[in-house]
Every structure is written in structure tokens, then in C-alpha cells.
Length: 205
Picture 1 (cartoon, helix red, strand yellow):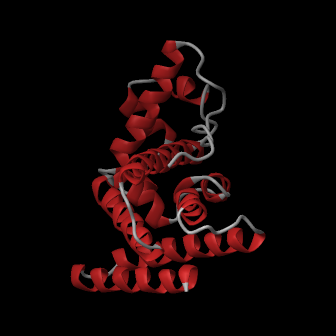
Picture 2: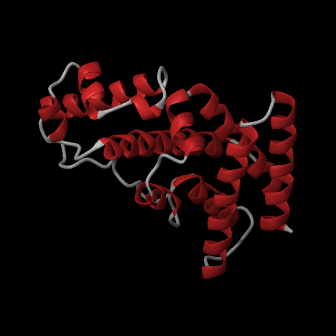
């Protein structure tokens, strides 16, 4: 289920040469590794550069500050998740909107569980408003997949109301998923199940 092109991973300047691309990749991998090991508050650009085997100056050629690196890591994960789900959706035959929504939420939680670096950013509210906006606009991110399904399978037309409802669903979903992860496993499962029912009623009733 293809959608509009994603916003590129945000960097200070595009890595044209292979060596530059390798530097950007090293920075992002280093940041992800640190996010999986230590609290975000302990991560600095100096520590990221050391983890990547680079000088701080080399890091600053492409990223102005730590937030830019965190955003780049988060955006790349969001794009990867959307690409994976798009491949799944091409092969799947969902019978209803609630079924599709449930699979999308399950897949997102599975992705969070498998990627502790992204989980730390997404659930901790450490993604900037600008980066989040790039992935929640019409046609991007999970909202873009949901929009495409509603248009192609359910015959829903584009409208300002649809845009608003999708944004509200995504915002609500993100906050309730973060809440669910703060609970014990059994309670988390119940919260996520209720979230599916709540969003399904809001979007499809």
C-alpha cells in the first residue's frame, strides 16, 4: 500500500559522498546503542562521538546538537516501521477497519519491544515537535497507512475532518501506549485492548 514519499532523516547537510554517509550512519548507530544501554539524560554529543569513534567536530558537520541526532534516529525508525507495515498490508486482506487498526497497533507495540532505542525516544517524549509533525502529516507515518486503508478499502474521502480525526487518533494512541508501558504486563495488555476498542469506535462507528 504505497504512500507519499517520507521526509528524509534530518541532518544539517546531506551526506553526498560515501565517507560522509558513513559518518552519519556511525553517529546514528552510536546514538541507538547508547539509548539501549544508558538513560537518555546521560547521553551527550561528546559521548555519541566517542561511541562512534569520531571527533565531536566530525559529528557537528552533520548534526547541530543532540536533539537533531535523536530526531534523526526516531524518524528513521518511523520510516522503517511504515515501510514494513506497507509490505504487510499489500499481502493482507483485512475485513474491516477495526481489524486493520488492531493489526497496526499490535505491530507498533511489537516494533517498540524490538527496538529499545526507539522505545526510549517515543515513550519518553524526546522527539521534537518538528520531527513528530513530519511523520503525522497526511500521507506520512502510521497515519498515512490508516488513511490509505480508509480511502481504498472503505471508500472514505479526503477531508479536513479526516485529517483531524487521524491526528487525534495518533495523538491519543501515542499517549495511551506510553501509559500502557508504565503498567505491569497484564494491565498493559488490558490498556492496549481498550485502546483498540476506543479508537475503532472513534474512527469507524
